[in-house]
Image (cartoon, rainbow over all chains, first blue to last red; front, side, top):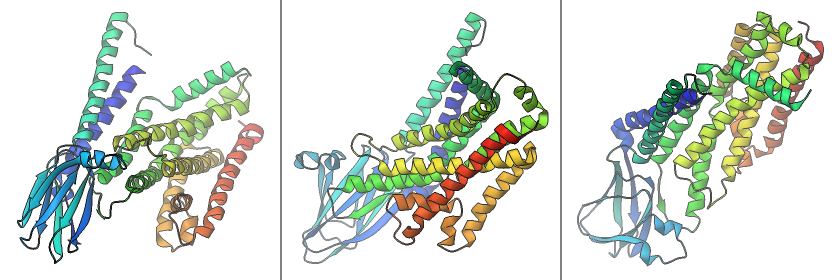
Length: 166
Length: 259
């Protein structure tokens, strides 16, 4: 029974790690983009659902006009009604065609984009997954190691006792 | 018969039915189907719009719908797993002459039938359930903050789907009494229904498996605006049909079948 459990865990871990690895090898699956308008003297929100900690956000605007970004940490949405200022992760004032930021924490980031100009800004946001999803790989490899440990110790105990564990 | 003997019978059926590669293969098929949709969800969602207080609810609903559909997409896996198990256990044992041997023991047929049913219906479903809950946890959903009622609906509809496939395979195995032919007949029928459901338009489409289970799931989750009036008919039709298959098999196995 322990051997079977170990084998199931090893295969589960292998599938998780292998599938994640091969899934992210396909580059088009690692890039997602969306384009939207920020109205004049107004704000727009953008969420990235399930950013893993290897994600790069690239924002491209149609002109070099100024706009500002408030980036809220994943705690922001969890703590609605609490102190929102405490959740501001970073602020940026952008005045170029392209802006880039790397996220380093898992979860839903919220971007509040403010347009102080008297004309709308067209923004194109690209999410680029730099690498595999670390959570999946981490949990998959943990399951793999757990399965190997169960297999290994069941074999050792089998040798010591002289019979198979059931 | 004491409950102790029944439990031993249950374990015996379990050990016999789920030999070494069986559970492993079921687990891996379930993992592959569920994990592929979980990873697609984790890397594809983003939204632009106003920030709302219920953003987490809408997000959790969307996640639960995705995982619910991935759970129902186990139809293809179930269409292989249940016919194999049932054909091997009921028809295979009959053709090998093992049923005659088992019936010669001081065991009631009812208990043998129930032990087989519990083993072969609930154990694969339990494996699917464990992997579905694991995926639910893996993609970061919090069980404490919101009640994942949509996902629970999908588990119930998934059980109805499993019960339908099991009952159909059961009646086929008892009717044909040959493992290979009953397996082929069940699988071809289930896949044929799947193929047929793609070629017809709603609302007839929603009466054919596996679309009928997706339809019931979406109606129960409140996501079906058109044709939702058909929901009680579709749900009751498949519940009654599965029960009829199951009860018919039970009476045939216990009262009529000659070995």
